[in-house]
Every structure is written in structure tokens, then in C-alpha cells.
Length: 189
Image 1 (cartoon, rainbow, N blue to C red):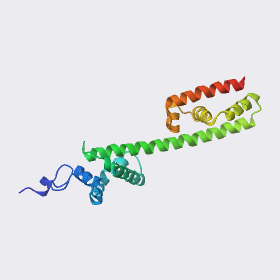
Image 2: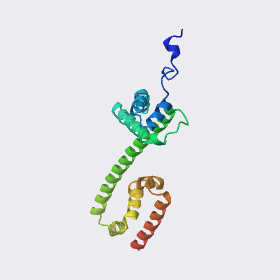
Image 3: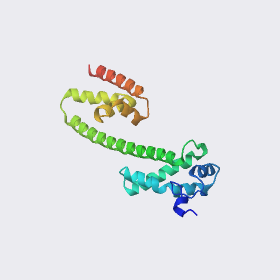
Image 4: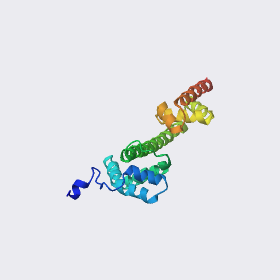
């Protein structure tokens, strides 16, 4: 007779337990208990992943929940092409990347705001007529152009980063910058 340890598969589940993939198919059909079983089975795996990626336990818990929320939203489109565990880690990685991007964007916006404040202070106290004219010309630009110029020159972002922040194509950013600089040159003449 085989011992209990020999009857467990590599994931630590007894052969009679349904696979994650089978549970996900049940969840797709509306079974809440099946989805809860997946959460119980894979919660620790995801928590460990996030903690190893350098986030706090509290943040790891939030990110784990975000991953399961995404999985739940995806359940109607699920098709078992690979192991669900692998798919969960793909989702978890995307949650981690999204969190990192949000944090980086927030830090960039804060830095840009500090730079704008410092630049605004220097403009307001400047006696140089050219600086005052440049500030006025920038204010008169249409908002989309002004935003691109501000993110580039005051925020220090590259075109690809600006496109990501604004949710537009990089070509759109380049076009707006081209037209903004042309208008600024005309204003400064």
C-alpha cells in the first residue's frame, strides 16, 4: 500500500482532487465553490511571488487579491491551454508591472509638479523679458500641445513615456511636439 506522500502529485494534491483547470472550467460555469478552491490553493503561491518581488506583505495581499479579481473577470473566456497555475503567474506578473508603472508615473508627476513649481517661481521672479514671453507663449498653446511640452521639458519624460501617460500613440506625441515647437518659435519672433 502506498504511503500518503506517494499519493500526492508534485503540487501537493491528492490524485482524486480536481485539477485547477477542471475547477476553473466549473467556475466558468458559475461554480463559486470551485473558484474558492482555486483561491485557497494558489493564495500562498501568489503571496510568496509578490513578497519575493520586493513588496510588503500588505501590498502583496492587495496584489494577490487583484490577481484573483482579474482571474474571476476572465473566467468566461478561460480555455485550458496551459496549466492554470502558470496562467495565474502571468496575471500576477502583469499586476506587479501595473502597480510598478502606477507608482513610477505618480513619482514622475510629483517630480514634474515640483519642477513646474520651481520653474514657475523662477519665471515669476525673472526680469528677463524673453522668459516672460516664453511663459506666456506656452500658456497660449492648446492644452494637448502644452501638456506634451510640459511633460517633456519640465517632467523629463521621453516620447514613449509621454504616450503612455497620455494614453495616445507615440506618433501623436511627436506630432503635438512638432506643432507646439513651431507655434512657440512663431510666438517668440
